[in-house]
Image (cartoon, rainbow, N blue to C red; front, side, top):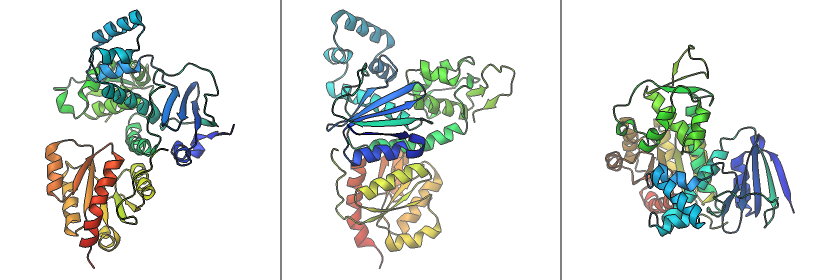
Length: 390
């Protein structure tokens, strides 16, 4: 039985997952930080989270926070579960609340959230044991039967995007022991540009007494969603934050399995433009792994035009499509006849329509579906070749 162990701050969880997935290693990976521990199994079918979910009823929480169930309805179903001995998921399907496919999707969402959380763990260690059977006896996580795709690249790309966002959040919320307090009532939850359900759940917990770590513990939502919501509310002046217990202190406004399909023209050169360094590096790595050449840039400027005319087949542009500056960049790229795909978190039809009118061949909403990205790149590559200026 082979064993590999080390410190993640030195090795890096991205490198570790990448190595285990690429080498098609089978076994159990344990990540430990202080008293916390998560165990991930790498199997021929995919990845399973064997241990590490602290919540006792993650499925129920998913269904409540997504609006599929009310808290009262969930209590009734849990009572039925106690009476019959059936699994909660089976009761959900039997009562027609969710289809089997929808239930599986909800469970995979929760497992992915637990794995994303690992990317934010500092001062943690790892141990990988090559084995087909769990080498230790212990209570399995309630999500242990859920299998994610063995190709971890999609997890890494989304985790990289979150780490870039988390860096901005940490610049404002550096310590989870700080205490947020609501100082203004939002006129409308719908006009905040945030997840309404998350705001309705999290905002009442910001009562000036609970620290952020306590809010994370009590909320139905994952840690990242809680931090993102508190950050968004503070940016809008709805929350203020102070040190724990410092009621009179200064207040600060918180202002494997299948490998990626081979593109139709291997060797095409893709320029990845994004202000998010970790995200664009992960995306460039993924494109190279799929058979493309990939270069990176922080953004578009005039100095990029000449190289693009000579050696770039297509561009992936990550910009906020609602801004006039972004649409102007789209127009300049269109002028040099380089096809480009625009990435955005904005799901507004108007914003996407404006981007398409400004020259984007398509708009892909983040988090990315990698198979769809490769499919769109494959479609763009042949026209890019025929349109390239001599």
